Image (cartoon, rainbow, N blue to C red; front, side, top):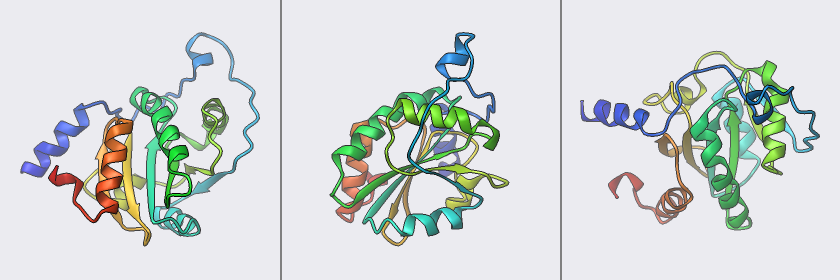
Length: 185
């Protein structure tokens, strides 16, 4: 019961429900979809297993997975902080990867958003059925953003539902890397 109350509380703290109406800055102001050149790969994955298999090639000690969508306000707010963290952790054994939960037909919007934020690592677009986040952690799902921190074996060590600040992300990853439990703090 305590877990349920905790989960419900987290959902209310800066998370989006499933609203599949994508909106970029251009479409929000009545403009047309932006034409952008996004050069980093977007890997389409149909399952959590396919995602973890692809991440295995990173050979990182820690992988931060951020599940987001172009139409999610809290996702858009935290995104620059995740980019900053990823750049600061380059060469430190930590990789940040983004998994868009937008519809596959919204790929142009996803590319525009990634280009706008100058994402230079591969990102992912979930094309499968059902809730990918529940495939990785059956205790979450239905609201985004969701951030999962995986160890080098692809095992989820921590899940955060809702907006996550740079400081929270940095502290959580450091705790996990030191062998601690971020839920205890």
